[in-house]
Length: 121
Image: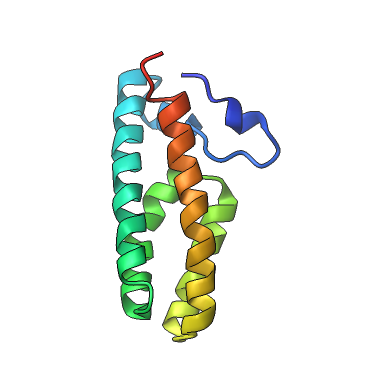
């Protein structure tokens, strides 16, 4: 699998960790990326539904964090940490703002994965 986005200064995602975990098995990587895209689609939908509930936002992102840390650039993981802190403090307005910035970024990642890694071409 070609991962052109990794070589850019602000890469969106990397398959390196999955390749390492799967010992180079490309079918494993593709399967894990498919699961990741499905999970992130569900995550963004749940975040949108529960946007005004800090406890739910915290829980949703806390569950998504391990997957994101394996695939996405560190900036997205840092954004999750920021949102979690805001949610714990019930700084709802700031949390909502950060979630609204996070959702399009994770959608950009899943779109890039779908286009570059999961397409049949």
